[in-house]
Amino acid sequence: MNQKYMIYMYLLKARTFIALLLVIAVFSVMVPNFFTVSNLLIMTQHVAITALLAIGMTLVILTGGIDLSVGAVAGICGMVAGALLTNGLPVWGGQIIFLNVPEVLLATTLFGIAVGFINGAVITRFGVAPFICTLGMMYVARGAALLFNDGSTYANLNGMEALGNTGFATLGSGTLLGIYIPIWLMLAFLLLGYWLTTKTPLGRYIYAIGGNESAARLAGVPIVKVKMFVYAFSGLCAALVGLIVASQLQTAHPMTGNMFEMDAIGATVLGGTALAGGRGRVSGSIIGAFVIVFLADGMVMMGVSDFWQMVIKGVVIVTAVVVDQFQQRLQNKVILMRRHEEKMAAEQPQTMNTASS
Image 1 (cartoon, rainbow, N blue to C red):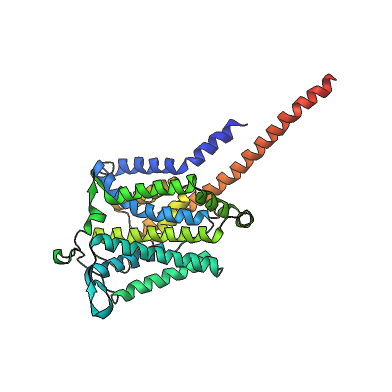
Image 2: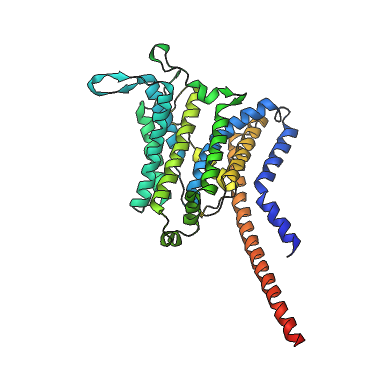
């Protein structure tokens, strides 16, 4: 086989990592404080937000779906946490219960999972296209977040010692072994996503559905359960992002997460996941998140206009899709070449035997 094609294939498969190295190299030269330990830790903390969403988005896209609601779900989950910390939980008899921080985190993540579960149920039970369903959920969640407190924020989420609900800031700003908690969460979910997609029957089902849903159904794959799971998992990731942002700001804002879904989709596509489903890796999406965030943070440090940042992000995402299509065509060509070589190798002994006889 032509070695040139093999080199091209290796370069294309590593394109996201190469892009990350180029981003770091360029901004390290142009921005003096870019490549420092403290700045890299801060930027990686920013990456964790996009990466968590991208992990959930990757599982959804691998099944051939899409989740446009993750940004709005992050926003409403932040408002749920803010309401529980500020106003408590009303119960029967007019009493109010104030939950401690772990209980607030649990209640909010369950809320995010429930929203994702609803997405999955509507898509699988009623046959609604994922794009339309999650677009509708995006509007519902964003509107509900605005209704929560009449469009106002929940400020000063420090809690009160007397109520036993202090310590919310630890989730977004706390450290463990000198590394921010959101980074540890990103690593934990990276390992979880990798394990789910590569080491479990569920992972094989996810790829099978994205590759050919009709064939997967005939093979006995529980399509409804798998899709319900991936959308619920995406809702969980969105809930964690909403909690992290509210914790970092110590404020829950109803517009939190605006356009987060675009960054998550961009990171997923940049990481090599095919929008048609059936092909991609969680690790690639994480590297894609690093590229998206490092590029954005580098432009901010250079003082690039927000408008130009949007243009450049868009160009990067479109370029990633074009390169991915080129890789697929090249990969198909390589497969055909291999089959041709194998056919020629199989026919050669027969030709030699015929000639000798």
